[in-house]
Image (cartoon, rainbow, N blue to C red; front, side, top):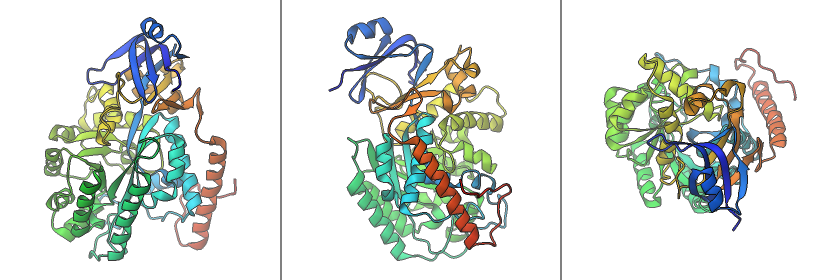
Length: 464
């Protein structure tokens, strides 16, 4: 085994429940785990042969857990953010008036790696990736070095989109295909990377899943002993569609068919009633609040009410972006605006949503905060930046003023996957160049094939 690594003479934000911060401190890592925290002189003396990392002018924090994302959707960056559906009737199906361009499996892999690059650069160490056909890019995600919970998507409504009303026509073949993809992904990928990759399952959304499929997914979840996830109360069109189909609200529908559990991550939960919040909290459902995309859509989850009801609050990026630094700050700001309270929530609470709570929501009980024996998933931020100086209250300073570019190093499972501002696991230059080419070509093909589609203002499709 390699010698221990000690990050010394630094500020350590442990992220524990007490909000403990250690100054002039050191953190020692051996193998996959943290083996010591304490005063620098003591830790360095105890591990004299360790590889030393100078932490002066820096702070060590737990890495971020992104509890809900779709990595290849960075393809729609700069386009879908401004194309949200109506929040009032009449509702139309879909989250944007433009379809996503079709990609080959290799193109999908490149876009997923672009998302992974942004995730690493913004201090993410754990990702819940939800999508269809994850097996096509799973190898690339494994190589990124990120800790992963990959949740293959299932649905069985024919010819419909998110938030679309009308009759529910079951596509039995789609259901079988979806379930087969989940079991195959679990068989092939669960436990890969020395346990760094785990496989869960996803019901796409209530208006796209029949009661029969949801019941089968719940049984499969129990059989495989995995985390499940679902898009829930995402847009008002979803609420209207489920009420039309089932005569109840989306959360009531999931409760009635037995899909809710304390091993479910419900993404969004921003178009719901207080009673739905109480239903979720009563079961102990984790809620992935996707604050940045919610702000772009002009919506807001009632975070305080969800938390008071008993939900575990985590944070995610959802579509088009992977910057968890932005997500944490946006979650803080949106909730303060919604509550008209300039003090609550605190920066420490927001950081806990993105770290300790996120790890717990994704089923990892020995990570998300820095403690002896915990997984060595951590980030190092450079406090010597003009916008972070003076760093008198380091958590408030970083949550309010920090940028993704402040993240200098990222460690997952005791291994640096970014060091001195350079990603170690992926060819950043090649991925960025190829992703730019792919995206321009893909959107160009779409508008050439579908000239009737409205082009967003300022769209530039010239070859890179």
